[in-house]
Image: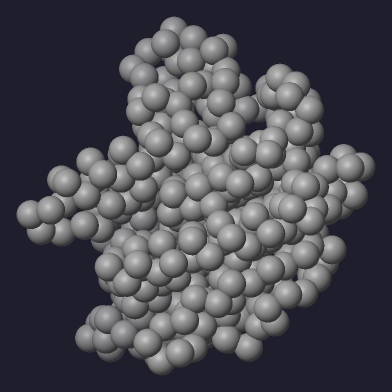
Amino acid sequence: MDALRVCAITCDRYPEDPLVRRTAEAAVSESCEYHVVCSLGEGQAADEVFNGVHIHRIAVRGKNGRPIGRITAMGHGAMLFYWMIFAIKAFFRLARLHMKHKFDVVHAHNLPDFLVFAALFPKLFGARVILHIQDVMPELVAVKAKGRFRRLMVALTKVQERVCTAFADHVVTVGWPFEKPLLERGVHPHKLSSILNSADPKIFMPSKRTEPFLGEPTEDRPLILMYHGTCAARNGLDTAIIAFAKAREVAPHLVFHIRGQGEAIPQLKQLADVLGVSEHLVFTGYGPLEEVADFVVHGDIGIVCYPSDGFMDLVLPTKIYEYSWMRRPIIASSTTAIRSMFRPDSLRLCKTSDVDSFAEAIIELYQNPAKRAQMVAEAWSDYHRFRWELMADRYRALLRSLASDEPIAATEGIAEGEAKMQTGHLVESYGSRDRAVAAVNER
């Protein structure tokens, strides 16, 4: 990728956004000149170079005059307003940067989808444009929006998604479950790729990986449940905490560590107090990405209690990849997305939002270390075919193909495993194996 020049755009902060960071550094690792236009957080420099990536930060200030930083953490109305402010500022910043650097590819990360139009000026002068859909907006709005205007808001997000995907030269998603709604809403199969948000080996270094704890839990060495990521109501942590409290009645040497931030934390702490487990539940805030691997290897069982609500059912949780990569067993909701990636023997799947199902799973793994060891081996087998090194190869191949107007081919080393897993998912989505195979072959 000797002469490729790429610019990514995100309303989030950089390098805090893990997906934007790992795609940027994957390109830089093969001599790509890579720029990122992002939101300025408090205390950050307006321009700097980090791990070979040129960062250009845009200040979007709140009522107090301070940089907002992570716009997507705000309320709905304010978030839309500041998204629009950022998109306008990004348009002019990107135009100036393009006149200087002549980008081959501009890579826009949603949310929101309409951020892709910040790439209008480079596109008019020959740059190819990627829209990276980390969250499908219509399904997300359908879950989060309330009141009488909900249907209108969902309809409007579908329209803007259709316009934005038509504007982009290529659309990338973070997993196959997002492909089906995009295909149904008119995105051509040859214009659509998935790059899974796999564990970054620069952060989750193999040298930090340890073997799972397979001993009998004791007061001095309890079994540690863990969760890391956003602590929002939609992530089902209330289910996890209630199940944890119920499991402790049978499994007394059990603790729960949660690392993250979010609006649900005060309610979750209050819930733990009511259930009488607050002294066995540890909350820690966000820190540097590099510390997440230490958190994971310190824990024993990852737990993901996503509900099935039309959006979370489609989400492939990055944390599941990270637990698999660091060789930790996983208890997870039996959602469409999770079943598309892992076989039943690889995880302990539970009924979504079912406290009893999760409590039973916790107790089963607490009492059965051999089961934990088997799950680790099976999950490793499933995940290894989609590890980040292969996803990085896919991203670099996509950049080369777009810049040279060549057909986009499947990356060698991924195709066999992907066909197997993706066809299994599409059978569930499309209703028959013949239709699923046809969908894969059309790609």
